[in-house]
Length: 106
Image (tube, rainbow, N blue to C red; front, side, top):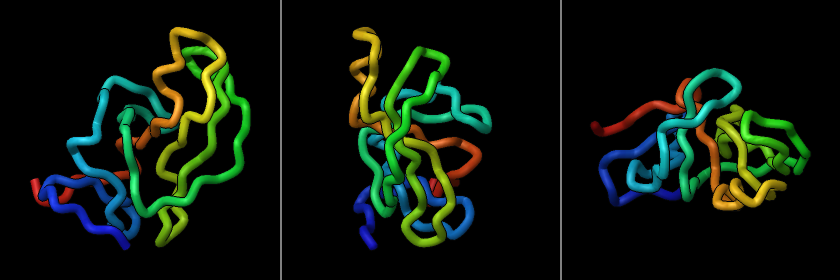
């Protein structure tokens, strides 16, 4: 399991496995399945599920759910492809649902 050198991290709310560094947050103004979500540049200790096309609030995207490597909790998704040019900046980035992660060492 990868550990962070930065003290402010996000962990899985179910098992407290570290999943992201606070410095990797791009935006806190996103919407997930369960409410507010973060757009992040990098995650660790997750597995990526199969790709599927989903119609989201900002249009059609190819996404893959991300699961906690330790407990398999669905934490959000990875943007694989954006069909609209204005949404291409999301490709390769991740959504972490606020309800599925907890802050550690704040």
